[in-house]
Image 1 (spheres, rainbow, N blue to C red):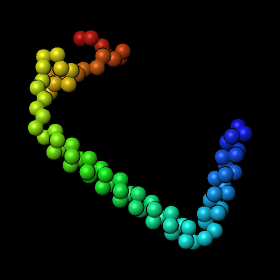
Image 2 (cartoon, one colour; image 1 turned 90 degrees about the vertical axis):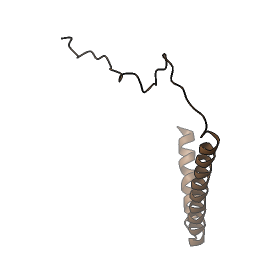
Image 3 (cartoon, rainbow, N blue to C red; image 1 turned 90 degrees about the horizontal axis):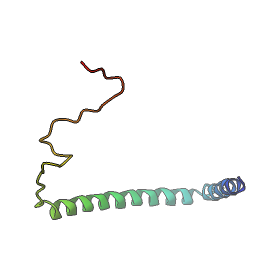
Image 4 (cartoon, rainbow, N blue to C red; image 1 turned 120 degrees about the vertical axis):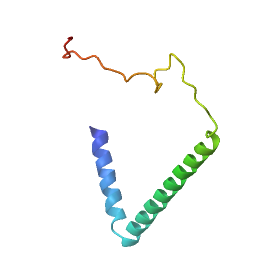
Amino acid sequence: MFKNIVIVILVFLLCSLLFQNKENVNLLVKDLADTKELVVDGADYVKKTFEKEFSEVVVESTKDDPFSLEKDSIKEDTFFEEEK
């Protein structure tokens, strides 16, 4: 309980100091935009690398493969389903 109160006070003080000056807010918005661009670029890089490295991998389905597309669809047993 005491830790939560301390955290709330620190967040309040940080926000009050941050929003006192308009330059601080502009700096924060700029940093958030740069971070978003970096995340998008990183995701694109991972996608391209994954497609390049694993494009030749062939997955063969086996008889015991639970995720095989050749099997019939999975039917869930429910308590309310009546047998006919």
